[in-house]
Amino acid sequence: MSDEESGWHLTESDPAVFSELLKALGVPLIVDDLYSLDPDSLASLQPLHALIFLFKWLPSAASEPDPSSIAQPDPDFPGFFAHQTVNNACATLAVVNALGNIPSLQTGPQFAQLLNFTQGLDPQMRGIVITSSDWLREAHNSLSPPSAISLDGLGLPKTGEDAYHFIVYMPAMGCVYELDGLQQFPIRHAPYEDKGEGWLAKAREVVEARIATYPPGSLEFSLLALHDDPLPSLQSRLKVLQESGKGNDSEAAEIIVKLSTESAKRERWAFENSVRKHNHLGLIHALLLTLAKSGKLEGATEKAREVMKERIQKRKEAGMEVDDD
Image 1 (tube, rainbow, N blue to C red):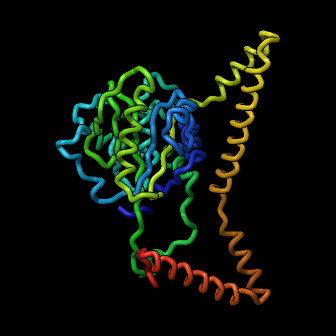
Image 2 (spheres, rainbow, N blue to C red):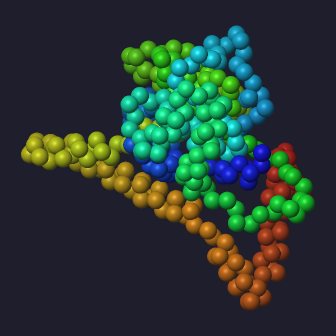
Image 3 (cartoon, one colour):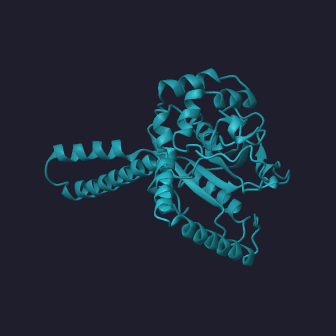
């Protein structure tokens, strides 16, 4: 199935995108980038429900784990698990697979109805039902609009592109599980202890082992943390401190700083998402028309060709595969 036939568009690995999707699902959670798996970084995001891992997909990634490995498929997994049945839906499917396994989670009415409808279905049918949901697909696509310019039908040669895939690591039944919609079953990793860091200590080992399979310095993956929205608890705590009178000025000031930081982050997310939703074709057309009328279009086109040649040459020198066309 082609990307256009599936109706699902590519999604950025960005907290603003995922947090907006969670808002559309009526879920009081947000997503933040994780640049480190050290205990302090993870502790600041508690309660942390899941890790969303984006990686460069390779054919070998679709194979089942080695039978001698601790990580093994769990065909009897009693939780929520859905297969990816269409292209480009892995981001939303990763989120849905994670949310479906968080106990007593508050959700919006449409998402609650969707989860209830898929109860008792096998992973393949559950994936079909989820990706057939018009409102969910619209929520997914709202922050990744399709290109307004299509090259289909021009007979141009197909070029290979790197494929990236989202999966989830999260706790379930005393073990760290890997939920990958391209796998037949959830992957059960090692059990964890409730004391200390809990499931995150074991998840760190699993993720770091996965990252170690890439060349040193590789940037072919990213990690996101799915956690509670801190705004309600911060606002509630600040209200209690203010009503209790003096003696809590230091803690109140600290909370005010955190609230300011969170508010600034939401404003930045809102701006970034507004840019993503905007159709820039009109602006591009106006710029090209202005360049043409001023007699500068030909020169700008030639300069763009030179820049592209330089980029191609640099990629060749770096040993990267390029298409000279």
